[in-house]
Length: 620
Image (tube, rainbow, N blue to C red):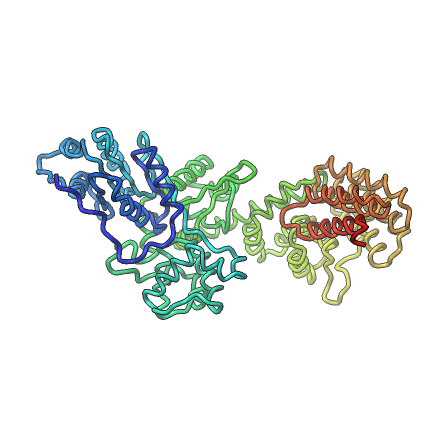
């Protein structure tokens, strides 16, 4: 047996991946079979060969690279491995001969591109590791070999610049994705530099291409004729744009589509069908969404669960643990665009789109109904986490005014907490020119416009609280009709500065909301009564109202109402001279502020600052 040739040097520079190289070193200290997993184009081959090159001194008998991309016949694998390690096999020789020749060798064997031959490669590697105790195998694949002792390292895309990095040239320039793009761009356009004029476009390119090295290299090759900004405007057709890879590259790495074609055709038919349907999701999604949207003939719910696992195993789908103990699934944008194009060609896009919108219409309606009796914060947090899907559903139902109005109205608390401006704009546009009938969808949408201050083009309210309450009772929406006095109190206090009228409306609101079982709005009415008494100067009378509001909000698990009650109590404590207690109340409110509710964060920060400023004599 001759010494195998060294892993060949690459002509282009190796950029980044230091964290991944360190991980491979650490893992290979404890295993003899390590498989690098990842989607096509993510850089598995380049990482493995760079690792082998850097570890040249660690293996007495060298390293060998086994390239399987062009091998289709499983019976040829042993011969390819033998040639790579410098063993000559005669026609009659078998795997036993190869194993014997490697028995005493301290060798790093890099087996590249195993995914299309997983089972025979797994059998061969397992046999060689058993017969050759000093052999170490580093494999690359889109699917694990699933043999005894195997450790896997899932290779992520390159680290991306954050959107905030646009404000910092240095932060953007230091990320691996940007560094790779700039390095490869200089190969075709000498003198290319990242600067203030192109940083935003380069960051956008890197993010929209998911940090996938192959995609970045293909995009960089286009800088010979296109600026980064020109490419950004063309990325919706990225599969057509990203072509013309290096001539000496593997054929399936010369275009992004060829790489994705290779991965797609390795899937079983049910997996292909599921991947196509999953392309409807714009961002991370949960299991129940995938089951409901994608689980129809020929796939059942169980097929979806199994398919998600297989797609993740084959590096076509990202599975990411969430903070609440659940798992979120996500397609990289390049894979999503590819699968969406296949779905469109297959003629199934309309049905998938309809099931997607129906699912999020149901989620919104359930969240609205739940909010009438309890906080329902988890339901609304989910809707905000999946806002890309919600917006897609709104776009889908736009052609049906009744469905659009119903969906927008059911998102009442999502708009109130997270996106007031967007909610006001969408609702006003949907309601302004339509007849205001006693339908559930219209009534809920109208109720939703009130806290968002939605108005017609002439500046007048879309409907008065009295008229809306009448329509609500006609439609059997008694729980919403019970909110009428709360709306009247708001108008009396904020628009007319009539505190006495506001107080009477709030007393009626407490009674009507209590009868309706609407605890979140009842908590708001109670706290607001305390606020009215504060404005009147009746501090002693304000305390019991605010405390009742806080108690009801906490019992209803309503973080939104709890924040409001603590906030009102904090100002009451400042007015009463107990600044230490005020600071504690504003801080307690912060513990309940929902992610992305920047208005509430700012209000509590203002309260804390006032408590400290007033309470510290040195700052007066």
